[in-house]
Length: 340
Image (cartoon, rainbow, N blue to C red):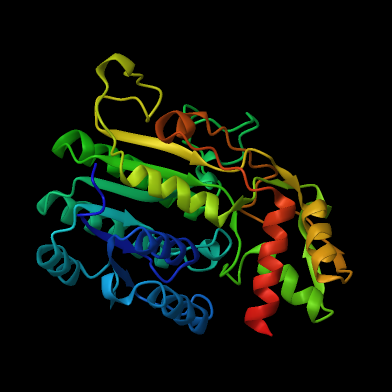
């Protein structure tokens, strides 16, 4: 699919993935339209600074609207006016733990909002819809590494349940209306411009301020930390290769091979890292030791995430490969510069 002559919509453009992807698309010469409701789930100034950073890349090819995907009429007007051929839906209420405190925010944004995107994509004939899913859909499965063919019928958080439902809705729309859709199950994303509610930002801030950090499950947890550049490259490659229907590969148990133009891919580093090791890497590049408080596992958390990315590699020819050491070094350098 030709992406350089297509109008591309990125929802959630003020987020870590949305802003990084928008910059990459602009550097490639694409015409990009971003939208975000810039809510106050975390520091709005960080989101606004991300948007300023996007503008610096290519202001001429960049447009932005402060808009929520829950506003169906405004969203439809935007689609009608701009004739988007590629839509990347990254807008969502994020956070596993916050979903326990404020469940209705997740239903509104992650389900109703996503339905609005699907409807607009149907009405205005989008040719490639890529949307954010999550590794959290795998729940507390003991089968590792996580493969797209595994059952995701037992989520352990409301956030995970909304992401799993997104995959089902997308598959239905692909089947009924032949809309090519790709769901990307992101594993713990980190890097410059990261979210303040995620472990790297929390740990860096606390260590620098000599405050205690909570180490859940007494450090006995493993995460498939995935650097932002690897995530962006995976999405970028999917932009030029929409999902298609491959009759010879139909597999009723695998949502990446069904009778619809719909694919599901893991986007991870395939190298789970122990939480204690992760903290040590941040300590190394900050040049400071952390004060640790060892705690029990929190509700909604899982012990290990581990992505099998073979399907992604087969589809795009790309395999995420940033090492944790280099990734943390780049993150810490950005953090110190940004927060002075």
